[in-house]
Structure formats: C-alpha cells, structure tokens
Length: 363
Image (tube, rainbow, N blue to C red):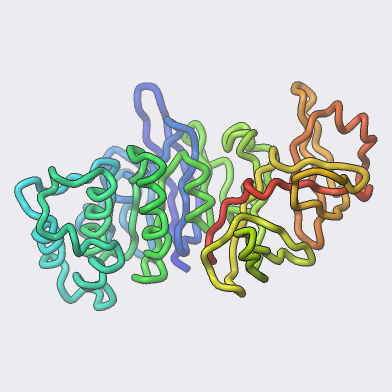
C-alpha cells in the first residue's frame, strides 16, 4: 500500500482548495464529489501542474513539493502517468507510433510494463495502424490509458477519463481499468462524479466538496455514512456487500450469491461458481415487511432485524439499517411507513430486494 501525504492550498477567484491529509493508496482510489468540488485541482496538484499551490506533497517518502513551491519536482520527474478527459494523442502519428513514443522515453524503468502487455491488457491490437482522428471516443481513451501506462509510472492519475462516453462504451472500458493495478502493480487515483464508477472500480474513496475532504476510507464504509448522502446522492445511497456465487439456475438464467448466511437471487452472472463478488444494493430498492409476503414477484425475501432508524426530519424519508444473516443492508422508506409499521430497533422484519437492483464487480 502506497502512502501519499498532502498539506496544500490554492486560491482562485471563486474557489479555494485546502487539503491536509495522509492517504493510503492501494488498487484504485476514487476521488469523488460534485462538479466544482476540487477533484481535478487536487489531481493536478499531485501531478505538479499547479505551480501556485502552496504546501507539501510527499509520495512514498519522495518530497515532490515543500513549502511555498520550494524543492518543487516538475511533473516529468514525479513518475506519474496522467490520463486527461480529452486524450491528447498526437494526431499525425498512428496508434502504434503514439504508444512507441511513450515506450521509448521510459525504457528499462519497469520490466512489468511492456508494449505488448499494455496492448493486450487494453485490447488494442486491431487499432494499431489506425490514426487517432479515426477512433471512437472509447477507443481513443483506451489508447490514452495505454500511452500513460507506457511512461511506466509509479502512480497513475485518471481525470474523469470516461466522462464523455455513453453507457455502452463505459461498460466496455471499465473492466479494463479495473484490472490495471493487479496487472501492472500500479496504484490508481481515479477522479469521477459518477457513483457507479466508484462502486465498480474502487476499493477506497476520497470525497471532496467545496475544496475540502469530507470523507475518506473504504468504499463500503463511506457509502453507509448518512452525513454525506447529500453529496453522494440520496437516491444513490446503497449497501456494498461481499458475496460468492453459489450456483447458477440455468433454466431461468439466474444466479444465486451467498452473502453471509443470506442467499440472494439475481440475473445470471457469467462467472464460475465460487467467484467472489461485491454487490451494490440501492436503499431505494429495498422494502420492509412485518410478515413474509406471498404471491409477489420479488425473489429476495430475507429475514432481517432492525439495527438503526434514521429519520430525515425535513423530508418524507427514513433510512433503516437492518441485519441480514450478518450482513448490513439499508432500506429507504417513508417516515409514514416507519410510523405505520411501528418499527423499532431490534424488531424482526423481512427485507424485500428486487433482483434487478444489483451492481456487480468481481473481487
């Protein structure tokens, strides 16, 4: 696990960023928050693109900046790969020559990263002789990621690389990005304001709002924090739970996933029995009942116990945390329902979860 220490500030006409934090960077760390919250600015400070930033930046004991710009290490000497929102490829060079340009400039720096390995990891073989202007948006970003990798960095920074892509193209690239840390041994800091990208990719997340860090830690813990739901999005509030595929029901194209003592049924997962998964269940897709319902289409009806009731006094809703076989699950229901069901902590209930509400990510 890499260590990143930042004690920095920068002022603009309409925005100030103030960060004083030590981070543990492992796998993919998501830098998340609303537009204008300071995510890209912080990434640029880490990269060395903001010379006006004051303070200190230290990565793995290497002092990239001390004091008011003192001992400033320029970007090209920080050992960083940077993927911008726009790819910035050389338009006069083919895809292969774009990659070879980066490859030649960093030879003998990291033997784990080779031109052939990067081409394979990002599925670029069919694109090598193409010109950048002939590529789709998704293809362009795959090449940009490959070129950043071929600088053989110690840290890869990605600034909303999928922001301009539609859902289909994002779905094509996300699994490739997900594998980068394990394939090449490089930690990644990934900027996004899309919570679904955080859930799919990241093990840890840093939440920025108004130029300040408001939360930092494992994704599952941050997603459960009620105090930052206005930033994450109340209708995106979710539980992240670990599970393992226990069997496939071929006749109905379904899979069953064991999560603690609970078994969840969901649409077929094209992975083998025994595969470990992380599942995201939105609070809005969980309902509660006092008795087991009959004659309904919902497949997942789970015995549970109420752990916590959080009512939003200025709104219609409440969030209920329940225990399902040793797994914490959250439900978003109306305060009126809380009153009518006479819900109390410790009360046994049934949690109803729609099969279609799962996001899935192999661990």
